[in-house]
Image 1 (cartoon, rainbow, N blue to C red):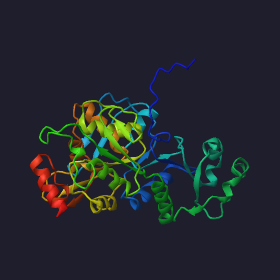
Image 2: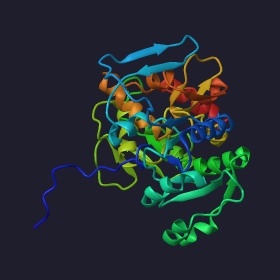
Image 3: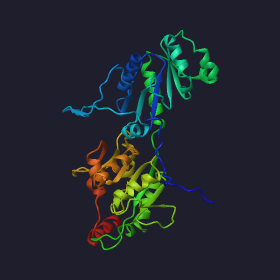
Image 4: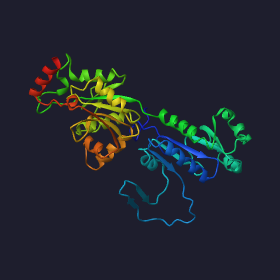
Length: 368
């Protein structure tokens, strides 16, 4: 008898304890940790970084009013109260490339151990938390690795060791850790239904001797992307992702792709832009910025980006769902109001073909 399941078994985004990508720093006093984090963050300013710490105030009155203070240059200060909850924190940190954690207070999935003889007892108390040390930092070059660390983790002597002053080297190492977690890209070709203006399914139009959906799929596969068709209804075809978010058009197709694989970025391509070629795809890939929500194509004379010639990063998924919760199902609206990398190209490459007359003219231009 099959085991009863109460909940759908959904694919989940890879998360550490509190964030998609985190590292705890521990072994010395909190001031040294905070200072190191801020120095490293200046070196890695091209990423979106956060620091997760505990308040050191002795008495804190529970704040019943959440205060949001915005500065006109874009800074936001939030004062609120609440409990640490891994699900809430994962939502809060979903948009960050890397989260530093004060390991004196909270356990991180990966660790940086700072050797400080004064804090040896503190390290011993947290010995079980040191199960994934990435590297070691010494406050004093003469400090030896504590005996109890070697006894518990014999391989610790093989870990890379830096001096606290080697900020450049430490930053480079952390940069490599961030790069390791950059999401792979998969392709998604949007296959729609019958177009009102065209009078037929635009994905089946023949510009290059085959249905345009096949041409678009091959274009993405040529760049070594595992590529799927986004379709409305389930057919059992392993090359298709059917809509799980119904009646939402391309927005639903993109969210359905993320539901299938929330740990990949998705390069979304429509089938009504036949002048998109390998050069356009390569431009998009060349300028991809995984620290942004998405990397999108924009025509030079256009006001807004093209949401259906765009690389959506995993961090876009939760934002799309937040827009859906507000009653919006327009991917362009999300992109316009989010931190997006824009790639400008000539308008001709992204011209939409929507009517039989436009199709005829486009095919003649392509054949010539």
